[in-house]
Amino acid sequence: MQKTSFVDYPGKVVAVVFTLGCNFRCPFCHNGFLVNGDEEVMSQNAFFEFLEEKKKVLDGVCVSGGEPMIHPDVFEFIKKIKDMGMVVKLDTNGSRPRGLKRLVDAGLLDYVAMDFKNRFCDYAKTVGLKKVGVENIKKSMRILAESGVGFEFRTTVVPGLHTKKGLIEGARELVEIVGDNVNWYWQNFRPIGCLNETYCQRKPFEARELEEWIVDVKEVLKNVKLR
Picture 1 (cartoon, rainbow, N blue to C red):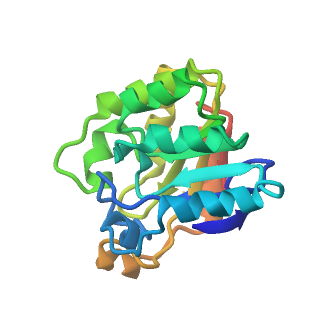
Picture 2: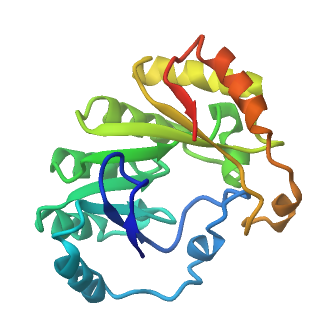
């Protein structure tokens, strides 16, 4: 858990709780200790005792990972946070649309940051799998677009996995699925603690180069920014 964050939820002060495990194996992931479940686990009792103590200074909680949606009890966990009168932001890879819709329909989410890993033809390679259910990713996108919940898409841009042409195609795919009134944030790859150690030797893109790419991508999707 990160006890206080001013950047994970737009305009809110939140605690960030990280769940262990993930169904993707993105080679550039710098949270490998979470993906592999190697971190010491904090009990839910301890977590909610902390929230009770700090709820006067915290607006809410960002539930991150790993991938929170792979856990069967995530619904009950988030509901308990909401029952305390706190806002909830969910970080997700979008691979579990049924669970996402259940949370949305129950009014348990206030904001969602969903990964858009790459254009769909490159998705499996980007997430480190032989096959990936891109239709589930698309379903989650549509759920968010129709939910009335605040949301954004985000992409970690990685040399060898992303190109300007591919990101322009990705922008077209986003527009086709959810329309052009959507926020898409890019973050530059960091070669630190990568799940695949060879990625630690890769040099990130120059920020200036990515800003130049964004100029072209904005011809397709206007709300694109580099974080």
